[in-house]
Amino acid sequence: MATQLIPQQYVGRMNVVGDCFVFGAALHDNQPVYLDIAGPATSVEAVWARLAQGKEARIVPDTGSSIVLQPPEPGLYTRFQRKLEGLAIDHLLLVHKAITEPVKVKAPMATPIDISINACMWIWPTSPMPKASGA
Image 1 (cartoon, one colour):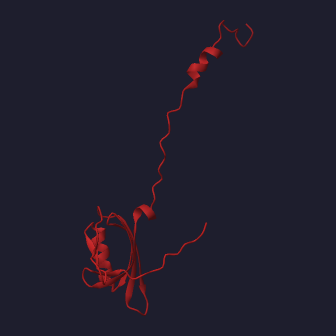
Image 2 (cartoon, rainbow, N blue to C red; image 1 turned 45 degrees about the vertical axis):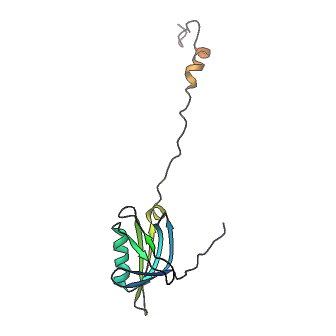
């Protein structure tokens, strides 16, 4: 299997209690599936808290219209956060739990056919069998 890397690329800014920078986002019907942000810890954590509560947040690119992030319900994201030493910023990845905690799904199966009823006439004795003891 080939490994593919997705390079980080500046997307825009988010502001809840202060500016933080978005370096990657994956959306499905305006619902965030993946979000990569960096900035002061309070700013990054405020974005996480807002999305974790199921509230709307916006990415504001330098040009063009803002990108609305609308989580359908609270508690859908796994948070990966670390402090970048020497830069005084935190790096946060939010990943949808469907990716980090997949659920095993079994495909529906057709009901098995009971062949024992059909084969019963072939194996049913027509005359009584003697006892195994020979009596």
